[in-house]
View 1: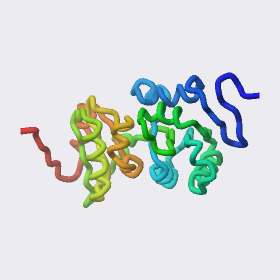
View 2: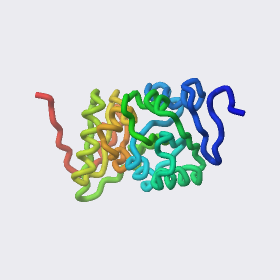
View 3: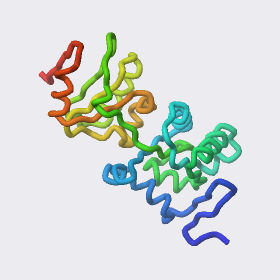
View 4: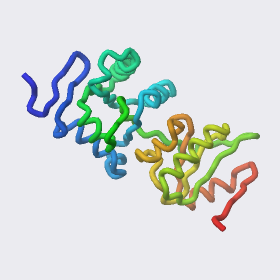
Length: 210
């Protein structure tokens, strides 16, 4: 018998066809920062991003994949890794996947991961280290691009100062092209950053919009 919420177990995988399914509703809610903060979670789209995140040790809660991916060896391997890590695996219809990602042509795989930030006090800069501090950056695409650039040039990480856009928004994660998983991100109030900066042993180079 198929449960009324549109989900049925298929081995270790739950098949979901209904947008009313509570699991789907929780994942869809991650489009909003309030619910990302409540669940301490975020979404990443694409098989490569999910594999990269798992390889880098990020904690996965849920793996969502399209029915068309059934039988795909790479997807099945990631599903097995998710189950082994204690996560849930959902096989969904294209309609459900499109609703989750808010895309008409979604990627075949979506991962829901636990948010992970670096406490500012744990940053111990040594010779040659470069950190990029962003003061109240607002645009998620810009933030994702900076994170991607930091990753590309081998800088150590990003410090977000003040009221910034969310590094775990869908737009930021997309723009980072997976670098969000490789680049440590710290958050700090302006006061906390200035206090930390007083003990920073290296050069501080500031820029201005003008």
